[in-house]
Image (cartoon, rainbow, N blue to C red):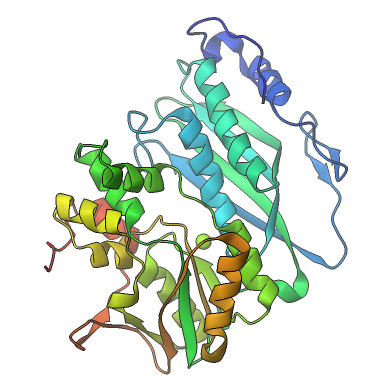
Length: 354
Ligand SMILES: [Mg+2]
């Protein structure tokens, strides 16, 4: 992405709304043969494909609530804002296509900051084949707000929903759990960010990796019964699959994918890594179910297609609620409390259970 030179410390107020729109338009790729009309008219006009379902989602990032400007660069913020939306398209097994970006900016925002935000947006969306085709700009009294509407598509037979899990299915998850929460706590508590463990969890928090190719690989196998992305936490999001599918689930604590770096960061923060994996949220991994006898091959196919690890973490059972089995065989019920628990209760995590 290229942008015209900007005077040092020039603000969005100096440039004006239409100047900023022109600038952003100039930075973005021109579109593709399915964009009949892109930025500049009242709406974008897009050609749809026969046999495909249109997917649409939106997710907002609000300064002070989802990010703090002292912790995240504009490029990282652009990537993160795109990633959380891409993750929702991934959770349907879909391919992202077009994004609309609404930005509310304080007048003092520097144009160079907006340039970097759009570079981050473009880098993350472009890496997954999506284009910005429109949006909206507004002033803001104080905080930066970024709201992205993202569209995508999926072939109708490949659509994966939350309500298809069946008793006996295996429960699988991509990648690693708990790192985003640990990264957020590391930033908030000023943990030394130069250690490899802290650097890894902070990166996981600031620039999560949307599992778009992984979602497509799961969908392509046609064996999965339900899928969701982990935004609220494993327990809360598995809870959504369970309640929508009228089933319960059993999770095995020892099977949860917790990296050595997450264990180290958790120990340094005085929190339990398993609790972070269960309830941390914002990991943007994919959680899916499939018949138990297909679990191994499905996981192997996703690993082969993407290089991303897949862990079998439990099973779907009759009834309701989620049960956790620990290494000593004890069973406890897991309340799906999710992200908000940590957002509102400082130090709400249990101390490590060593
Ligand atoms: Mg979601």
